[in-house]
Each structure stands twice: as C-alpha cells, then as structure tokens.
Length: 381
Image 1 (cartoon, rainbow, N blue to C red):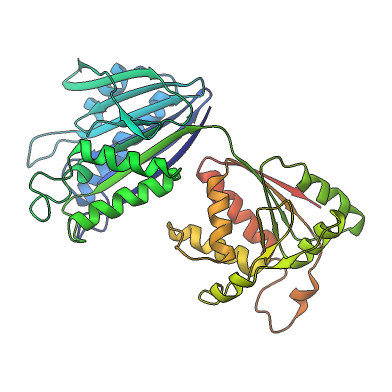
Image 2: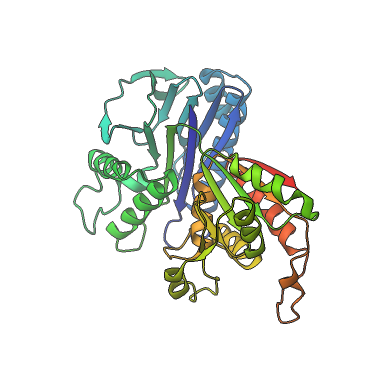
C-alpha cells in the first residue's frame, strides 16, 4: 500500500515564522509523519515545534518506543518563562506498508480517518506517559483511506469572527470527507482546508494553522520523454521505453513528440483550445498524441513547471506547465527519459535560454520531487 502525503501551514497574522512544524520520514516498513504546535507563536513557538518534530521523527525512525520519545522531550524542551510550561503539542501518524496505522496525539485535535467518503470512528486509549496524557490508536486501514491531522488553528478558525465556537472537529471531518469524494489529492485537501480556515477568519489568522494529509492507495507511475536522443539510432528504443509505461505517459518537446509519433506510427496534433489559454504565463500550447496523457513544449514549459512547484502552490490555469506539475505531483514513481541531442530550436539567438538548461531543470525537478518522497529515475539517451 502506498502512502500519498502532503502538508501545508499558514503563519499567524503578523508573524514571520510559523509556530507549527511538520516533518515526514521514511522507515523501512512505514511512513512516519509528525505535526507539532509550539507553545505561543513566532520564534519561540517555531523553536519548540522544530525540536519536538525532529526528536520524535528521528527516534521513531530508529525504532524507539513512545515512552522513551516523550521522556526525551521532557528533558530537552526549554521552559517558557511566561507560562512556566515546557511543551509542544504533537500528533504522530505512522502508516505501515502492510496497512497498519498507529496514531499518538498530545493536545492536538483528533486525527480524522475518512473511508469511502465518510469519517469513521477511531477507538482511542488514553494513557499517561511521563507528565503527558497521550491518546493512542491502532487499526488496519483499507486502500483509499485518507488521514487528516491538524493543529488547533484549524478547529479554532472563525472564533470571534464568523463562528461562535470555531470550526468544530466534526464539521472539519465532514468537509474533508466531501473533498475525498471527488478523488482530490492529498495536497488539494490540505490547501482546501487551509483556505477555508483562513476565510473563516476573514483572511487574518489568529493562530498558526497547519494540516497534514496521508492517503493510502495503490502506487501511481509516470514516464516522461524529454528531448530527442543524442544518437538517432536510439529513437526507437526511447519510444519503446515510453510505450512500456503502464499508467501515465508524457512527452515534453516538439521534436521529441514527432519522434515518438513516427515510431508509434501516429501523428501529433496541436491542442487548439490550449492556444487560447497559454498566453497568460508565456507557456507554449499543448499537443495531443495517441496513448499519451500530455504533450507539451520543452524547456520553457519545464522551467515554468519548476517555478510553479517552488512557489508551493500550483495555479488554477489551463496550460502545459500547470498540467505537467499536476501530473508529476500525482505520481509516486517517475522516470524521465532524457535525450542528449541539441535541439535546433535552441540555436535560435532570440531564445534567451542556455543549451544546458534542460538537463539542469530536469535535475532540479528530480530533487524537488524526491523531497516529497517520490522515487525518481533519470535515464539518459
């Protein structure tokens, strides 16, 4: 079972640093996610939450037990001189590839589990670990289950502005469940919950607000052919490698698309509709090719795709870079078939792009995607 993961956070109004922190790590048999809300806000809260997530993630990844983790936190966290408290809240979600899920929560809203479009009840047991009352739960998940963890910035959203008692947990759960019915990605669910929390506060958050989403599903694969091979004799092999992909196929570059079309005995068509929508960000129009899910221009589109990803939020537009970014973020295993030939179009003196930029952008894309836990392979031709 694959664990699709995403998280997002918004700072309290007027703060440069977020007092909520989230980390994801990989153990041999599981994915470990930790969300922490530091006491207060700003620099102090950021430090507390960062220490908490690092300690928990590192120790659990090494096989430590929860009791040892909490004892280490108690001995490590600095004391707040104002409140005379030394703690951060935390939520731990460990999703095993076997389907088992373990959750531990201290002073955070309960983690939500959504199955078949509905929130399900998770039986919890409360036990004292050191000086903390920790809620624990363990159960066997099903393919398609979605887990949503959050800080109290979400459940307190709207208090004193649009809601008397805030965005109550059961209403957050129903809202998240409705999003899963449309087969939304983990990142889309994160963004939607945060956007709604911000709107409930009139755009001015009174607390740091964060959301973590884990979606348990089958693995998604994607292969993208980028650029023509250095040796034309490899054209057929590259096209065969692309054809062997069982799920999503993408072609980047006009010359590359023509090579694939020739080897597959078909034709490339221009997507006329995208010609009308592609001018806003200067992204060239898309194409259509039988047996592929997306055909884009090459280096300009790739560069814009990387730019969108680094911004942290893919815009809601219909162009090749947006579509490519969405495809890459939805995939778990990505193979780039990278051609080494110099595209004649890049010799145009009016094109302000260095010839080596293509491979540089692909390398940066690969590193960015790996930072999200995706498996990325580069195959050169």
